[in-house]
Image (cartoon, rainbow, N blue to C red; front, side):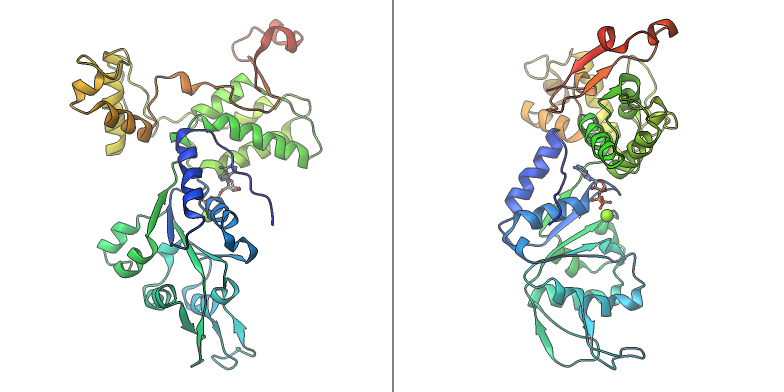
Length: 360
Ligand SMILES: Nc1ncnc2c1ncn2[C@@H]1O[C@H](COP(=O)(O)OP(=O)(O)O)[C@@H](O)[C@H]1O
Ligand SMILES: [Mg+2]
């Protein structure tokens, strides 16, 4: 089995790891929702690898990548002669995943007409190959994933409610990277090491300005995009310092990032969660980040203290210190201050003055 890299230390990420532990010993269906690149497939694999099913296969099928007409035979297999070109009996992915785990990616793209057959396979653990009368029995754990809002699709009758409930026994929502900023430095360091090793380079330092740019960017493509940016950066690097060109093309977000409002500074708000985050943050600033007590933010917002703390965690609100690198990494990594230094200082020997922090 390929080893799985699961990097992260934020509260949200740890909650995911707890879920993996909890889900591994049971066979229940899991529905993983989250934006593209947030790690849905790695989490599904981690659940499989942590379960007794790891001795058998993890079979992934991306419902969006296969034309609707071919999906049925891909999932359930076909008998010889089932259609023109079916020259031999072929096993479907369901059978290949017997006693293992089936990962159905982009489940929102599963054609409506195929949904009852999948439901039956899930519920009764049986199905027939295309063109065959013989019923096959399988024991497959299904983990499905989507970046669409399946619940709305159900309301709009684009996805069957019965299948939705069957898949959604245990829902998991993966947070976008911009909501777990503490994980960015760890992931960046991990990917630098990974690609440096692949490319036969030794890189031990991420310049501070590069890290800041990584932290200030919105990451619509999430971890996948971060990984690609770092890979490209490692290609451009010649010495032990990750090239400053790595983040040159990244524009700090102007539309989607909610800046912590500073006295009347306009805040860009798109979603209800943005509005909630901005309101809570503004109140916290007023109370100097005091949460409990009669003058605390919880009282002002009319919430119990614990509910406010839970909301702050959910919305990724902290009093700013977590924006910076926390030094939790155990990798021998250093960051150097680079931005804003006058050119003559920049040309000085980097190591002595500018080492800001040595992790580990
Ligand atoms: N926690 C993590 N630590 C390290 N790499 C990760 C993590 N989560 C995702 N990745 C990497 O990011 C990329 C995208 O992950 P993937 O699971 O394919 O996302 P999704 O299925 O949500 O689009 C993959 O290369 C994966 O290995
Ligand atoms: Mg995916």
